[in-house]
Image 1 (tube, rainbow, N blue to C red):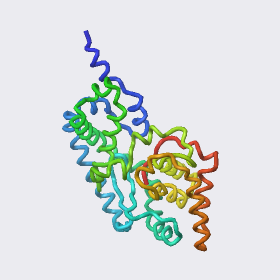
Image 2: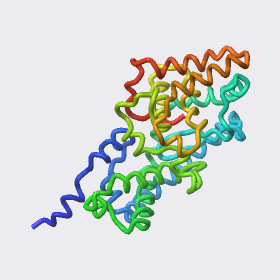
Image 3: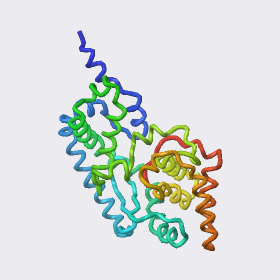
Image 4: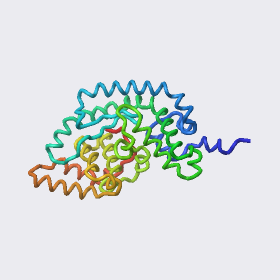
Length: 284
């Protein structure tokens, strides 16, 4: 007679399916059920990923202003982080865009090739992260499912795998603050109202719209970085981004600036036709 636990072990959960739809992992359930064995099995592929990702970042370094932008290559793809306080005056934006624009366009253009590299390290990173969460929580995958806390368990695995492995990984204390949060991205994928949503959801909307050529780079950059005008706790709450942008637009007029890109960003989130963002794209 089959062990009923073995049947549960083979089941792919709804959350796993949503993550798999965005980031392919050929043997995800096996990796999460048997992380120690999977680390050994995928170690060589991770080394290849790390070498190839390192060469990509090395080639980019000559064109990156590293005190302004950090480019990371993890198992979820390439993402960028801003190393300075985000401002909305024209002088700051002009300087930022001089450096950020070519990188963002390049990431979008090369997204398929970059994902082919990223997937090489994905199973190893997920296995290592799974083992870390297993030790931290005292539960394996099956126990987390049975205890009805698997979504939170899975989120922690993906958060670690996608941010702590690769080239220029995050520091552990930066998890959930910088980088990407895959589980939250897919959990928030549907029904986003960009004029009133959380900071993560606004970033998701911006990435999706830019990927699909629905907004210009300048609007993408403003929306992507706008949550960083707020404190970390405030970014996690639903915010009236339209009101915030309207205030910033008025302030730009008082400075004698045109505010044209702030106005276009405001238009992009108040246009009801643009409120159907779903899914997540390769970070930029």
